[in-house]
Length: 494
Ligand code: SAM
Ligand code: SF4
Image 1 (cartoon, helix red, strand yellow):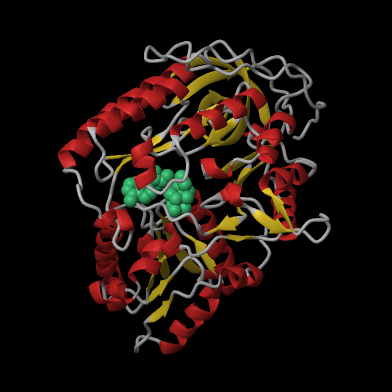
Image 2 (cartoon, rainbow, N blue to C red):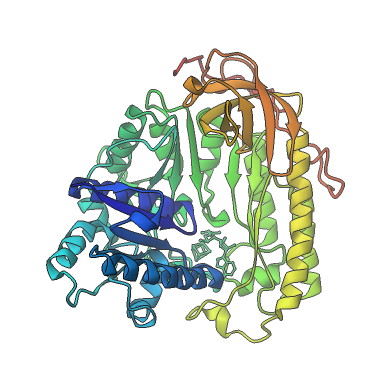
């Protein structure tokens, strides 16, 4: 009999990937995904511990699940409630103490044991059945996970690296995901080939610190390969049109990777490169191990390798001791670099991290005010970037149906969300789109031709819809023209 599985995913793309793998692990046991917890035999909350609110949301969701579970059990049907991910790793048994309806708590490095845990619970029936699994054996997890069966649409995630050794003073990741670990090159290549064979046209390589990747490669003549060389190998997979990677640390942007941006046409001209602050004093207190100048130099090298590169970043405002001058320096950096999009957060003290114990914690009112100012600036730059796309023809990977009938949704090379009218048969193709309108977070357009094409055909590379020329706050020079580089052959992929 088919049983129903509901997974709610919080946080980053790495959790999205983990949730997909959990669903794949439970499929052979007869669990099929459902869109509602009401009818689920097992509910998994795959959690994030990066900011406080995320954990609180999990606890309130667990309260709702408890009522649902009580109602199901009163009707003679069981429900297994599980908490996975980084909150599970950080809080462990405390979750079961606060919410006894929870049957399983397991961390991000233990979910490969899910089938065995579910079987144990089934054997225990309604008796004592709490399971806590928070070991850190990441190598074993990847060894024991079954082969990924295929794609989840035209754009797939692929985790290549986990954990982090950088210990930024605000961050829980080194404690919840453990030490840095890179998957072997052969394992990554196998999974990528399977995803492409099943229809993926784009792969986003994932890692908490993805550009620290150094996977063993028996045939490389070196003990390990860095991300730049891995990307070159992936680019040889026939049918893989787009490669992206996230999230990177500025300190780990090496020459090989920057050169890959220049030379590998499948590597998309968009990079999420978190800087966190524009003040050296704050960066040092954060233990980021780079200064503002280092970041600016890295951006310059990247833009000279790939003139149409669009940038995104993460910012934390209200870090302990951040002065008005420090915050102004962050605004200055944003104006100098200009971003196509960016994420910004109020600093949230995470238990057990060094920054949580620092003096001069700032009041929420200061954090709120700074966040609003920063977000206004970023929003203006994002809108300007989108406005500059209007009138251009951009290759768009059509990923899924849009919200309105007859509409499809996709992404430009620069990660802009695009909506357009197009036949559903084109989902999974890369098509040329004339951009007709810009909005705060997306653009709309019309199909330039129904014939799908490989992005970046033999024609000149599309020019960047530069935010610099539009942003009233911009002080930086215009980017060099993006059409100087000729590239790759035309390959029809659909
Ligand atoms: N590894 C990436 C890096 O080094 O930039 C970041 C990964 S972290 C999961 C994602 C983002 O969450 C960070 O870049 C940071 O901006 C934000 N973040 C992490 N800890 C935070 C905290 N304690 N308070 C507010 N934001 C936080
Ligand atoms: Fe966290 Fe990123 Fe710093 Fe690692 S590099 S500790 S994941 S913010």
